[in-house]
Structure formats: structure tokens, C-alpha cells
Length: 308
Image 1: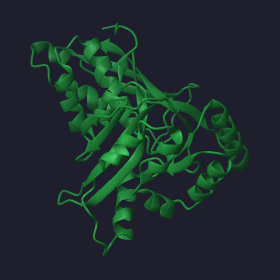
Image 2 (image 1 turned 180 degrees about the vertical axis):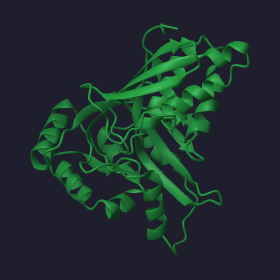
Image 3 (image 1 turned 120 degrees about the horizontal axis):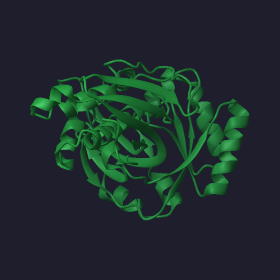
């Protein structure tokens, strides 16, 4: 069994579209202790199957349990690294417990893929080191390498090139998943491009002063938060502006759309402030919230794999 964290983009700078359709970004990834869990049990017939459930055991809207699931693709990619004759017989049943919002801008699918990589490496006793595992992760998706790494890190390229950044204190957060379904990341990027059409968009970067600010108190960190995708997310989901306003009015130091959204996250000073903000968000918007903190560790094995 393994788990992996949700991510928050403390800062997300997005460059113009590249020829391949992707965008270069510069971002400060921050892992929080909102984690999905993957339990992998072995099979000998080479099949890889996935079942996804909520923490309460119910189905997860928006998640398809077939070969397109990123966790299945992660297990397949890892198995392909084993060149021995036994590879054809390596299989797994993946049981995912979802706590990270689906299509919410917190990289829940990437967390599932990262947890699957470390769980299946242990299950199948593969001789794949951490560097090779990161290479597989980068092939799967831009956020998967950070889900492996955890902590806080500067991400460049598509987000797959990472440099750890020290954060000297715990940061407390209230996570407010949006009702009404998720937002497609490609759709948000496309809307960002449309809103910036005709503008000169610079290459994305994060200056050293911003990195230095991470060693300061939460009030200083609050001033650096920013997301170039937020205008696009708000354009597609205008209701999110009301959520952001409610959290800030309730005492959050800052609030922003997480990644491509529509989940909103609020930085607060401490646990007491988190409770006040969460209570007000739930009262005003009649939806659940999660209180969490970071930085948090990346994907990790929780117990020895068995059942091969």
C-alpha cells in the first residue's frame, strides 16, 4: 500500500503555447497532507485492474476504472521496464481510495499514478531506482514527478523539472472543492490563451525574492501567491469568485484557485483560523471543506506489498 499527496501551486506562471501545444510554466509546487491511497495486490496472469472509491466506500464521479486511468498506465509503464521473461506475468489489482478532488486542480490523478509507481515497484520487487522512477513519472504527466517528490519545489518546463525549495514552517490551508463538477485542464489553458490573445506573453519565471519569501511567516507567503490560470478558471466558473470572497472575508490570509481549478484553497495563520474559515465556507456555500497543511512528503510505501 502507498499514498501520495495533493499539490497546491503557490505561484503558477504560464508562458505562451508551444508548437507542441503544451505551455512552459514556472511554478512553486507545494504538497499537502490530503492524500490518495493505492493498495496493490498481485496477480500472475499479467492483468492490471483498478477500482476507485471514496473514503466512505462509494463510487467516484468523473473517474473511469479502465485502461485510460492514469494509475493503470503507471503500472503498465513500470512493468515495461522489466525486461525479464517474468514481466508478462506481472499483474496487479489497484484499489484507490480518493480524498483529493477529481479534476480540481490538485493533481489527484497524478498522485494516484505516483502512489501506484512506488506500490508496484515494491509489489513486484523491481530493480528500478528513484531516478528511473522519476523518468517514468515524467512520461506519464507533468505533475507526476512532483507527486513522487513532495515537499515544496520549483517546477519548470512542463512542471516536470524540479528543484526542492526549503520551507521553514508548516503552512495551514482550507481546501474548498467546487460543486458542479471539475474543470478540464486543456480547456482552462485554452481559455487562458484566448484571454491573452494579442498580448505579449513573456517566458515564465519566478524571481529569487519570491523563493526567499517562503522562509518568512504566513503573512509574507500570502503576498506571493498567484496563478496565471485563475482568470481563465473564473471566466469559466464565475461562481468561484464568490467562494474566494467568502474565504477572505472569513479571515483567510489569501485565497486562490488551485492550478486549473475549480478547487479554491485558502492560506490561514493557524488551526483556529482554519476552523473559522471552513465553518463560514460551509455555512455560506453548503459544501464540504478540508483542513490540511504542508509541506507533506511525496509518494511513499505505507506497508510491505503482498498478495503476489
